[in-house]
Image 1 (cartoon, rainbow, N blue to C red):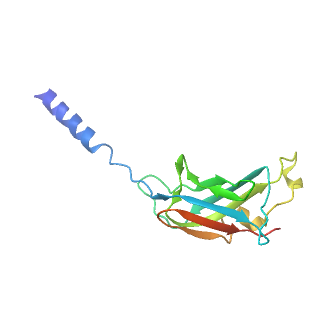
Image 2 (cartoon, rainbow, N blue to C red):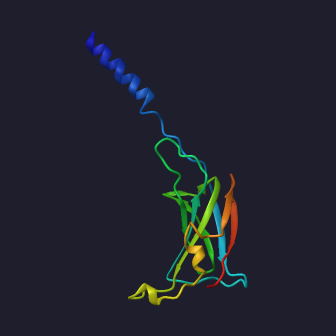
Amino acid sequence: MVSCRILLAVAIFMTVGCGGEETYQLAAVTGTVKFPDGSVPKGDIATVRFIPQGIEKKGAFDPNPASGAIQPDGSFQLTTGSEIGAIVGTHKVVITIIPKYPADPKLSPPVVHPSFSEVGTTPLQVEVKPGANSIPIEVKKP
């Protein structure tokens, strides 16, 4: 009788699991990063990050930012972890461009205005919608 209870408990646990994980809806995001004159900011390291804003936590998981490398032509494609896309919703956009790896990072002048490099100061905010998104991003020079 005890073994039947144990089997029943195991069967219920396997059916219910540990509460089921909720996931965020992702949408494909591509775009370009350019200066107002149409030129592309260049650097040895060039990334764009979309930081979720006002998106509710699901279970134990915070909404992860999406990121992508800015290509030599200014184009990018975002991924969130190993998944293609960004979480649907509002995001602050942070641009990081480092021209070279100097011995002293303070010797390397910024490529884009420093306000674009921090989530607290970036003026860039975008909405990722369900489906495919093509988002042009314009940044200013320092």
